[in-house]
Every structure is written in C-alpha cells, then in structure tokens.
Image 1 (cartoon, helix red, strand yellow):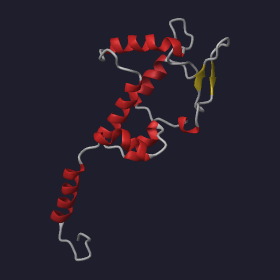
Image 2 (cartoon, rainbow, N blue to C red; image 1 turned 135 degrees about the vertical axis):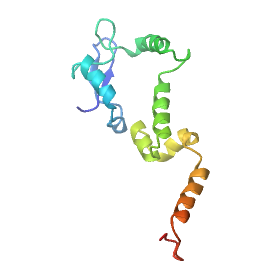
Image 3 (tube, one colour; image 1 turned 90 degrees about the horizontal axis):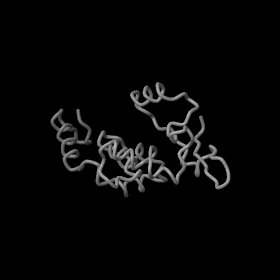
Image 4 (spheres, helix red, strand yellow; image 1 turned 90 degrees about the vertical axis):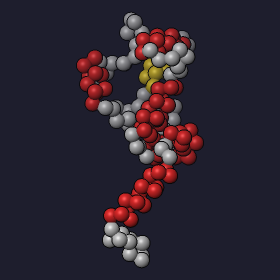
Length: 149
C-alpha cells in the first residue's frame, strides 16, 4: 500500500492523501509481535488511531490522546510524541544497526544528519577497534603485506 497521511482541511472531512515528501515514503519492518497485535485488532483497511467514535484523530485533538497514552504507559510527564522517534533510533543503535540503516528508517536526507543527531549513542569505538586488531593479530601471524594468515 502506498504511503498516506491524514489531511485535515477546515470545512472538509478528513481524507487520506500523499505524504509531504518522497522521503516520507519508506518501509519500516515491523516486529512479528507488532504485526500479530495489529492483525488481531484491526482489519487491514482500518485506521489504528481513532477517536472514541471511530473517526480519525485530528491533529488538534492528538495532544490530548498522546498525554493520556503517556500517562497510561507510565512515561514521564511532558514526554512528547517525538520521543518515540528518538526511542526507535536509540533502540536500533543499541542493537548494532549501521548509520545507513538508521538514516533510512528515520527518513533522514543524509547519514550526516543521523550522525549529527545520534552520534553520541553509538558505542565508543576505541575499545572495539582495539578488540578488532587484537582478534586478527592473536588469530594467526600477519604477513608483511598486512594480511592475516
């Protein structure tokens, strides 16, 4: 299904329209547990986030919905919706995803943008580089050309 966003225009019913930019259209691989919950709770053509009467949640009302969700989840008061994006990026980095993968998942225009925002979360490379060299040098002898044997 192509990417869509809810468009709200005063005086008109909300409708699904194209995303703002081409970079907004991307595939996000969902974990199996999420797919199972969504499949059990929502038909494929239904919105996941709706009002109490089943209508789309408008941007003007979303703040209330979000604050209720933050409270129900036990997250700190004042946790903004954008925190989910940072959580997702942090989770990917913590589990060893590359800069390019995180860039693609977040829709950043460049890896530099991803690094400018999240570089502090990648593990310190000093220990990893030492370990990499130790692993190669202790695994065998090194020829003069620099290749391990």
